[in-house]
Amino acid sequence: MKVMLLAFVSAALIAVLADVALQRAGLSAQDVASGPDVRVD
Image (tube, rainbow, N blue to C red; front, side):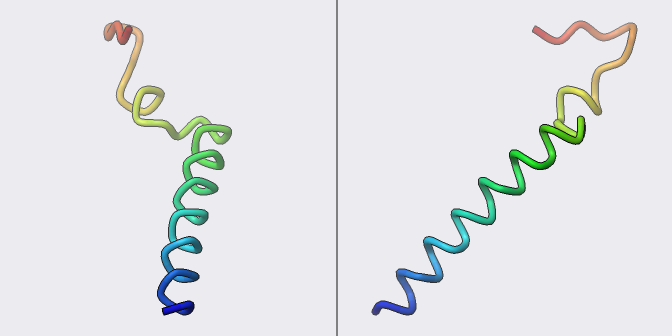
């Protein structure tokens, strides 16, 4: 049971860290999909 809980926590931590890293690298979906002719609010 402890191993499963550790796996869930690890997966959540990896997901959050990946999101933060991609946002800082400018690879968010909004930055990638928007161009000069596209207005994203």
